Every structure is written in structure tokens, then in C-alpha cells.
Length: 288
Image (cartoon, rainbow, N blue to C red; front, side, top):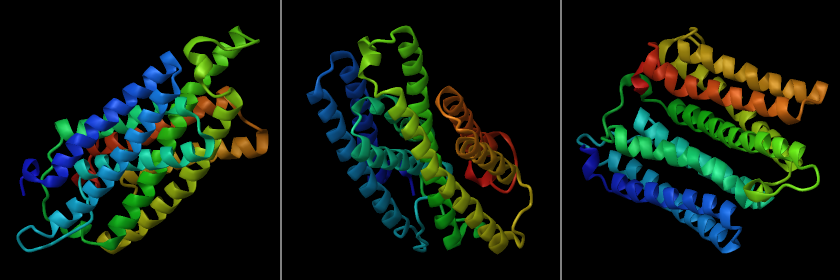
């Protein structure tokens, strides 16, 4: 089925525009300090999220309209996974925003979701194709959902860590009070706490993703672990965030060291997700 003719793809085009406008509003909010602008951005995020949720659900329905009616969850190729990745980032952002109510964070988190969905809409083929035999399993859905929720939490942690490094540097220079755009950031203590909480959300989800992936591998190929490049890099990412939490619990790691480790972890996550699929060969190469 031609992706350009799909209603879900057309809806996602509008969602991309909505996320772009919301991202701009968050940046403008930092400059003008106008709460109405921040509220506008948050409303747009909610509208975009609802529309994207509908589009994902409708794409699932559209897969059943294909010749043969072999429907499947929209999680089976690179285009669908990137769209879902953007959706999970927005989901994690909304959850944390409801708890912390720090509008400035949107300027550093929403760009991840916008860049993901924009890349998918502009560069990746959006057609729906039948699943290869290895993907015809419910384990696909369990594995992708848990992994990408973990990835999304790490994306939020990365954005917040970048904010932390900027804020901490500003606080060192202006010990009495932060000014300008940085003055709109949450305190470094709050940012450090959000970074930690986001990774606490992402780590068990990534762990569950690796476990469901192993179960899926056994179902599809008869072995739980084969040291495929994706499996190896997933383990590397797992060890980075395990080291983050271990250092936090046992050595009290916080602040800049924690922020840098969070950023490094997300860079490894992106390579695990995209670099392995696009550069290396292996059992996950069909993802491209």
C-alpha cells in the first residue's frame, strides 16, 4: 500500500507541524517569560499526542485493509519504529510534566520527538508491507513497546541533563541568582532529580525489552542470545545505565557526572537503535 495515500500518514504530517510549532513556543517562552506561550505549547503537545495516537491506531487498522488482510501493530519497520519513538518521548514528557510542571523542559525534550517524526515523514518510506516470517509474533509488540518506552525515558533524561550542565555552569558564575534565559530553567537540584527519575523509568523498561527480545529470538531463530550486533549494543546500553544507577546508589553520584553519563548513555542508545540497523548487519537488519 502506497504510504502517501494512507490517512495515517497524512495525519502524521499535521502532527509534525504541530510538534514544530510547540517546540518553537517552548523556545519563545524561555525568551519572553510569558506563561500564555508555555500554555499554548502544552496544549499543542496534547493535541499532537492525541492525533498521533489516533494515527498509530488507524495505521494498525489500515494494515488489515491490505490484500490478504494480514494486519499487524505499526511497529515492524524503521518508519513505524521512529514514529513510535516520537510518540513515546511525548508520552514520557507529558507524564513528567504533570508531576514537575516545569515548562522550560519542553524546549530541550520536544526537539527529540520533532526531529524523529520529521525525519520519518520526510525521509523514510511509509508504505505498509507484509511482515517477514520472523516478525509474525506477538513478541514483536512486547519487545518494541518496552524498548522504546525505555529509549524515550533516556531521551528525556538526556535533554534534562543538557539543561543541568547549562544551569550548573550558570549557577557557578552567578551564585546569587541566574538571569536571562537560564533563569527560566528549574534549579539544578530539580533537573538532577528528573534525570534520575527518568532513568529509573527507562532502565527496567529496557531490561524488560531485552528479556522479551530474547524470548522473541528463541521463538524466531531457536536461540535466546546469538551476540547479534543489536543484542551486543543493547547490552552495552544496559551496562551504562546500570553503572549510572549503581554509582548513584553506592557512591552518591549526582550533578555533572550523572548528567554526562546520562548523555553518553543516550548517545549509545541512538547508536544501538539507528547505527546498528543502518551501518551493521545482523538479524535486525530488516529494521532498515
